[in-house]
Length: 321
Image (tube, rainbow, N blue to C red):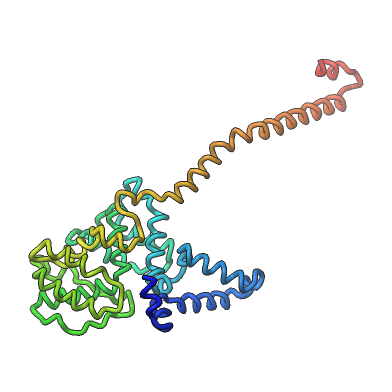
């Protein structure tokens, strides 16, 4: 990958790495909140900004237009979704697409429902869209749908053309808006599918001239070589389950390790240890104020008795004894 980087021109490298996207966003954030950032200085702000980009936390609570702007932002969002809500899967809870969309909106308030529904359609296929799904199923379907959204929209057009007997070898210009990506719906008669070999030939031609991210043609060939005919959603499900594609993305771990996050688990263990050790260390502190409070009450009681007494010291003496 480094060899390719050095073989690119400056303009090509900036375009592929999206460096200008982050520089423009950093300046925009600096100008928008200049009163707050003026206290810490521009250099400190830029250092904090690009540190957050490096750690992938820069997409938290940002608008969807920024979240979907670069492949790195999309990968960071998917990883953040997994880290924040993996406990749902660990507990075995099943949620509907609307509930998963609510979770997505906790990270990105204006995240579109349409993308969550498309991810759910890959899993549910002909089932009703309100059927509950496991976290693992939704996570991997959402990963493919969000990261490769433009590509899935383009192969949806190829599939429809093949299914209707049209020539699919026309130039497909992918939309730059992720919300405009279209996929065949359940109303399209796709149950019988299309010829898998012909479908792959069309996809190979598409990938050769495609400017957006897409799975490797080798992985697509491995999927389509296993069957003679394929339906659109059956093909998408095969992509979702393909370990090679998931491994190449490197966003979330494989299904055997999806509920494990060593760094986060270590932080949780430290936090739990602190909670367990806190009561033992704080017991003397709690006892001391109690003794002082009791002592004050005793003094107050004695003074009150002395004031109300008629001069005799019997009550005082008896209390002291």
